[in-house]
Amino acid sequence: MFAVISDIHSNLAALRAVLDDIERRQIKEIFCLGDIVGYGPEPCQCLDLIIDRQIAGIMGNHDHAVFYEPTNFNTGAERASYWTRRALEKEPDSEKRSRRWSFLGRLPVSIRMAKIMMVHGSPRRPVNEYIFPDDIYTNSAKLLTIFEKVDHLCLVGHTHVPGVFLDDPDFYGVDELDYVYPVVEKEKAIINVGSVGQPRDQDVRASYVIVGEDKIEFVRVEYDIELTVAQILANPQLDNFEGERLRDGR
Ligand code: ZN
Image (tube, rainbow, N blue to C red):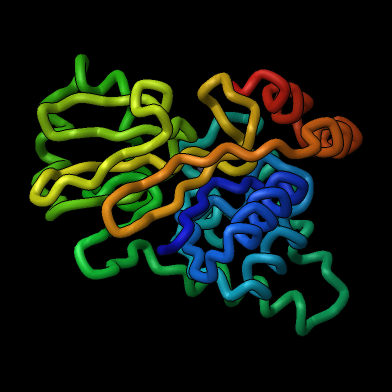
């Protein structure tokens, strides 16, 4: 059994709440599908926590943007990305500074565990491609091509909308699933684990999943949203919207 988190986006309060919840369940192994940084106010602290807890990470587009450069980002995301880079560079302790940079620079674009594949975006374009619930209606050919790359299960993040894609193609949100996807042998599924620090499915709580032998459980955890909102509003380099949206989960 292991836990999979994603899209923390420098939201330390949310990350702490999720890690506490995982610890309470005595789950030792944790994977992170990327976007540790971006949008939020505490990139250094979030990176330190991920590194200290020895959480295996994958490269997300926001991690990539801070290390290299933002591409196809909206203005708010781009500003946050440049501010994040400055925050990482400003660290006076050179050991801490290089530990964070080398962690970011060494993130792999995918991890494979037995029959389970893990990426940030999609198995076709691991760092940047979005798989949206609407794609099942508007772009089913895209989903079918993506599913050709999946043997059995693929865990993704990136859209911040948790749920399960099947290769019909179809999408099931967490409510429809009653928060559990029973793993079916030979059935292909792409499971979006949702976002820890920037949920966008109108549920404001932090999202992650627990992967067991025969099921994947979606978990939501309450955290101090107003703490993170206040930090974002107090930071002139971050757009207020990145904080306000946390109150609605959008
Ligand atoms: Zn993200």
